[in-house]
Amino acid sequence: MSCDWNRRDCLRWTAGSAVPWLANIGRLLAAEGERSATRAPARSIILLWLAGGPSQLETFDPHPGSRIAGGTGAISTAVKGIKLAEGYPRLAAAMRSVSLIRSMTSTEPDHERGTQLAKTGYTPDAVTVFPSIGAICCHELPAQGADIPRHVSILAGSWPSQGGFLGSEYDAFQTGDPAHPVPDVHTGVSNARYRRRLEDLAVVERAFAARHGLHAETLGHARLADQARRMMSSEQLRAFDVSEEPASLRRAYGETPFGRGCLAARRLTEVGVRAIEVTLSGWDSHVDNHAAHRKLATTLDPAMAALIQDLRERERLDTTLVICAGEFGRTPKINALGGRDHWTAAFSVALAGGAMRGGVVIGQTDPDGGRHVPDPKTFADLHATILKALGINPAKENVSPARRPVKLSEGNVISELLQVA
Image (cartoon, rainbow, N blue to C red; front, side):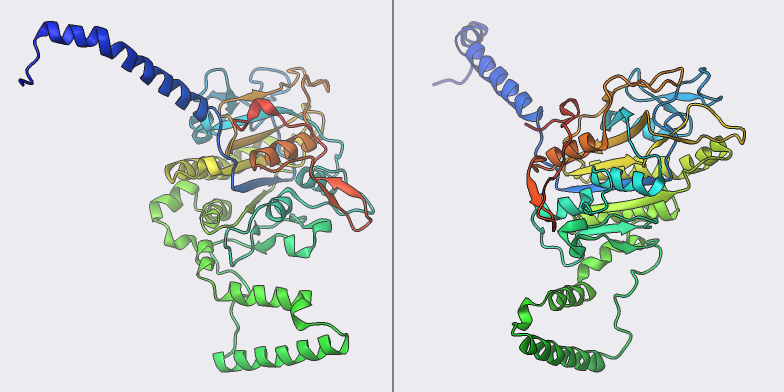
């Protein structure tokens, strides 16, 4: 039988076979589109913490030419209609992966209380110490085989994230500039002496347990000591060492402690760390606000943009949620010292990756600087949305030491941001 077809044969096949085939392809493409409209839950979070309260007007919500701008200009981004303050060209280019909440509100104008509210989603309480979002993430999700702490704070500020009533084992492990070795992970003595110390410690543990009618294995401090020993000998500690990365990549993040912290954060997600907090301080701009923000932008812009790009190129952006936030914003009015003061009525948070839709803006602020904000969002709402993106039910309850049932979040999920079912 000849395999040569003439033109009539081809037309006859097209009429009889190709149309159903094309219809099947169409159905397949439609189904694939439905699947791509949602994403699997994120597995890790990276919080870029802007300590001090960044000005929304000099970062994510500029109002160029208005009275409240105080001369701050704006630049276009990769998403039509969305502008950022001048000084963020690299982040502007990545805007298709970034979403903004411009109608964030808070009830806490004090730095410490504002930080606690932002990191936990709960107003500080004299009785209950609430866990931070990173602690909840580690408590609710599997360990992923990490030998090192699953909750890490790099360049920790005055109030790093903590485990609260979940326990101190969920406190963030604090470390400094990744340019330097992680502290306190080397014995400082010979191997032989170190082994003898472990043997002596085991004797003390058994004696203490026997005296109190316990098994040594049940002692919490013995378990923590064992975890510390595993960490000290773990290859996963290399994730903190950004010197292993190419010089070109380190330059892309910026040769700053914060830039190195963001690079280390990406490396830590690859070894199973669930939650990393990287702090950039200096945003409390009561004096000379514009100069302070221009300087900080040269650190934040390359670091955050490089982090997003790096995660995307490694196909980890969909599984890593990046949050950039501070405890509140700054006043629309510039004070007598050229600064902006604390402002809880309306400020911004940026999110990227995970199950977040890119190029979305939620809410808006008054160009005249008023306190009224359409569609206001709270930190409880933000936490509920983050938990949903992680596949965690925000309404789940834990019981505090005071026997009080506490929801993971009392906020409402901001569904417009999410691509999860």
